[in-house]
Image (cartoon, rainbow, N blue to C red; front, side, top):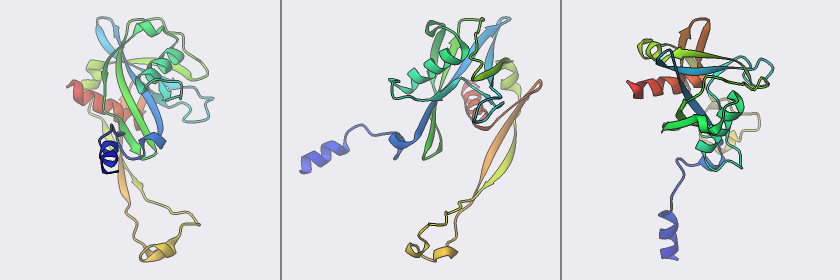
Length: 202
């Protein structure tokens, strides 16, 4: 019994407790060479989508059960959304996962796209635009703070915890970063991942 316990504890473990049960998605930061310099490709989500219509994002989405890995999901989603061949996607880096909450995790990858002809999936993508990497590296994003406070439901068992309904929940402030380019504003999850990517590139 002792040996079995030790063996089980020494097995490979998930990135964090609850990773297997979290909503997991993968995104690709696509780099495209235009006019002799690298650009970052962004997409505007279709305005008919149920979730986050019109938001700016990287290609990506939910990791399906049929995906062998987060990387496989990122490549599949990039292929499906941009209408390019898998062979035109050259992955150059895997970034640290972004843990938005214990129930939501994003695995980002960086890839160079060796194509300049895109056939977007209009059900998911309204348009594409390209931002010079040089511009992003010199840009100073601005930040706004959002108050985030726990709100227990009506059925929460206050009688089980010290101080009951008077329990002092900890609120926190969440940073929301913004990048402006032309008529576009990049913010939210995309801006957080972009900011981390740019820090690494610098």
